Each structure stands twice: as structure tokens, then as C-alpha cells.
Length: 216
Image (tube, rainbow, N blue to C red; front, side, top):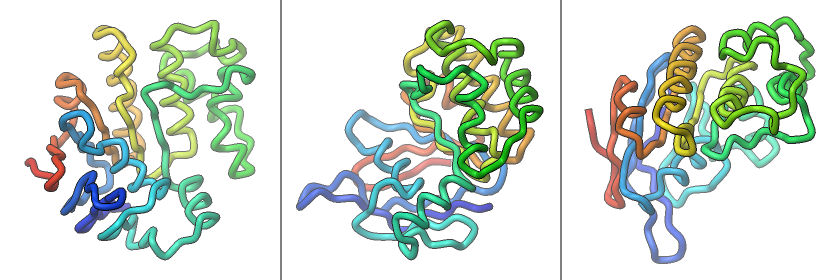
């Protein structure tokens, strides 16, 4: 599925967060977005996911314009087609690792323990499914978050500073997992990051400013 953002702008009253943002991400493509703090990188990701509304322009995945969907329809669309990885992990402390990873499948009424086990193995967490998140390192918890975001094989993965809380060596391992898994499943990836090392893994790097977006 192709993600197409056209002329997107986000304003709070008279204050523009960003404007004139247009980009296209092909199936299987990995795009990184960089920019100064406060230019709205996370807000742009939230707009791409239909979590935030925007002031002008359009966001479409596979020709479906998100502006035409109501809140319930957007939630169902995200559940089926989008994975999200946050800087702060957002794993649920009262669920074990396997249950955290299985959450997107449960929301789709799919029960597939074998798929969960394969995904845990793929991200280097084989045998840790029964542990609670607080028994893992930060890098392991982020790999749980990546596994959870990919378990339902989304067409689009949105990653917001996924290595921001990790040391360089652990961040490199997490990026290895993210890239390998998205390549294997042909997932389109949009990564927001301050990390030059993480951005270097992308097919393209785009620079977001208040005036728009640019890059190769």
C-alpha cells in the first residue's frame, strides 16, 4: 500500500506547526524524517496515523483518504493496517511479553500462538514470552514494542524516536531488528528520529521544517 501525503498543514489557532508537507512512501520503502525539535515531527506521524486532525491537505493509504473516515472507522483502519513504535516503548506492565506482542492480533480476533512465537524468535526474544516487561532491559522492551507493531503484518509502520532512550550499541541492534522485519514483510516505514545513525538506515531522508519537507 502506498502512503500519500499532499499539502499537509497543521495549525493551532494562528500558529503553524508545519505546512506544505507532501510525500509519498511506496510499499516496502523506508523513509526517515529529521528536523529540529518543535517542528512537529511527532505530530506529522500522528496525522499519518489518523490520530491527529490536520488543518489543510490530505493523508491517504492505498487511495483511502483518512479525512473521509470517522473516529471509529479510523480506529479500525489503524488496527488493520498500521503499526506504531514509540520512544517510550508503551508495553503494558501487567501483561507478559507474549501477551503484549499478541495484542494487535487479539484486537482483530486472531489467536495465533505460533505466529507470536516466531515473531519473538525473529526479534531475539525466544524463550522470554512468559516474562513481564519490568524483567527486561530497555533494548529488550523496545524489541517487544517492535514485535507488537509488526505481529499483524501492517502495511505501514510509523516509528517515533524508537531508539531515543537506548545506548548506541543497543540502538543499533534494535534498528537491525526493525529493518530486517519490515523488509521481510514488505512494510512501508516512516521513522522520525534525531539519530543520524538511525536515519542512515533509511532509503531516503527527508528534512521537516515549519515551511515544508525536503530531501532526496
